[in-house]
Image 1 (spheres, one colour):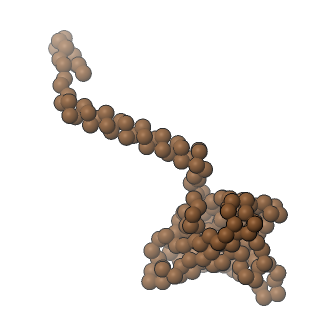
Image 2 (image 1 turned 60 degrees about the vertical axis):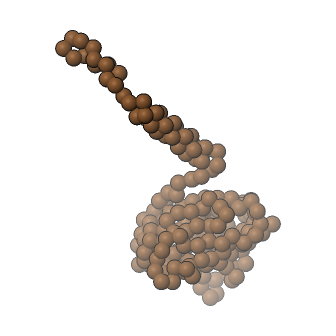
Image 3 (image 1 turned 90 degrees about the vertical axis):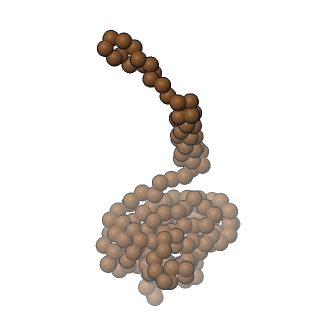
Length: 183
């Protein structure tokens, strides 16, 4: 590196060790940029988006967030948008449970078939919670007043457990549920 000092070129010296560490830092940055690109485009990893704002005090009172009435058939929190292909699941996180905690609920009779696209709409009524579906790339925060969404496909039939990943109090360890995917 050189600079002009009074009309004369002055050569600046960079220690070889420092030069090596600068090169290592640049290589690491390039590797991180490539990893983010691969994760975002090739592995289908999504960033959760804020769908809407809601009042956390009244969110469970109206459809599609409300639990089904005794005389109601099906669960309004689990909607079949395109038969067998597309579903919307509305989940409320609150100390220390998810509602519904089992999707499909035993009362609903709705089964989510393998290969169907499922969009999760998740919010919280009290404190910040985490929502992670085991063995998938679904993992995001449930924040009071915000509805976060993420879409995924379940290719393999079985039971997928979901858990709270953000410590939310003494009952945190009991905050879990499951999703049943059929053939």
